[in-house]
Length: 171
Length: 171
Length: 171
Image (cartoon, rainbow over the protein chains, first blue to last red):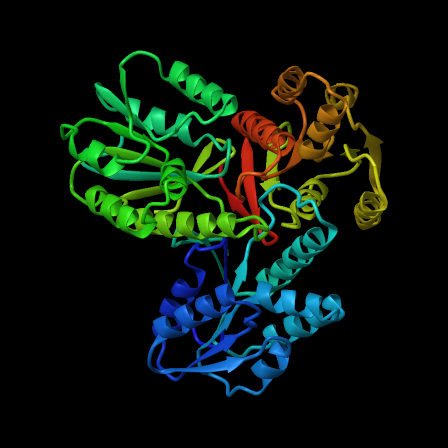
């Protein structure tokens, strides 16, 4: 069972089982469980994925939508309750599309995540292990996501790399 | 030496040494060795790669082509003989291009792989750690491949992530 | 502290903290420290990244530019001094763009790296864990980079996979 008041960071590629594993870890602790969703349903593909994740979670979960103000949502929560944040890369995408100061937003989030609260389970995507993308926006996103992942991993108590649904302990 | 009657799953990026490592594991067991090739030579690049893999294997190997009916090919084999299946992502591509029911095919394959036969060495690609692809077909492939990799990893006795030719034990 | 006369290979995705970690390992040894830069500033984006890396390193470092003749640069250095080579994938790109014999260049580099000198810290990118690239040049680069990474990992004493700024020991 994960420790209380701890930050667990779960990183992995697309469809590597990040969310499902985070749910297993969170529900190993007593409910109530809070799910903070950062996804915004821009299209049908995304709407479908959100509905799929939501139906899988089932009973005992409260869902909070925080596509932009993730730090504020975390601060408003009571302590000592498992919270699953899914996921950082979508949150980052939302800020980029809104043309916000990504560096400042990341620092604010890292500041909240570094406080001894939680237990928090933070999900994020590894997006930097392919070929350099053609377009500048994708390169910027890749850089910003990598930088954010490093920030969160540095303050996390546990870091897991998901490989084909299995966790590999990095920290 | 890998145990008999076991399923070993070898996952990794392009040119990470997956096939070569699987061959080392298979040939550590007594011959005869069976190589199940899922590749279809659509173009010269692929023809070249297939020829390269075949020449590297050398003596003692029987090659079976199973671009689509991989489950059937596995069922037809005698038990207790090392079999290398190379690779799942090409097999998945073949089914997608043929417009087959990918979910059903994956379940059928996972069903055969979960039987206590083998020793089987299954190779697959990690394709989800780059930027989200532009086109919908690539995204669907990435999702299906990730889901299939999770299915196989869940039933495998051993899971290895190849990194620059070296195996990292995940399970 | 890393051993003297050893080869440490640090591989990871974009913005995974490869260079920063290599600097930590190198500067754990006594100065003088040599930084061999393979980057060529084709555009402003690259010029910016080079300047950022250089300013982070600070005092105690000597920088040598070796966009092509990396083997020659290594041979010209005195032994028993920490050398950071950053990075192999840019060096490979330079040779590909110059239309050189990449296989021969890689063999020559691997030959120099396999000599008992150093301590050397070699940084490279994992680029093979995304979707197969559309264009043939990117596929060729991905193959060549993977092959080179395997060559260097095979002769390295230590191989680290960087995940969100954290090293995962592979060898």
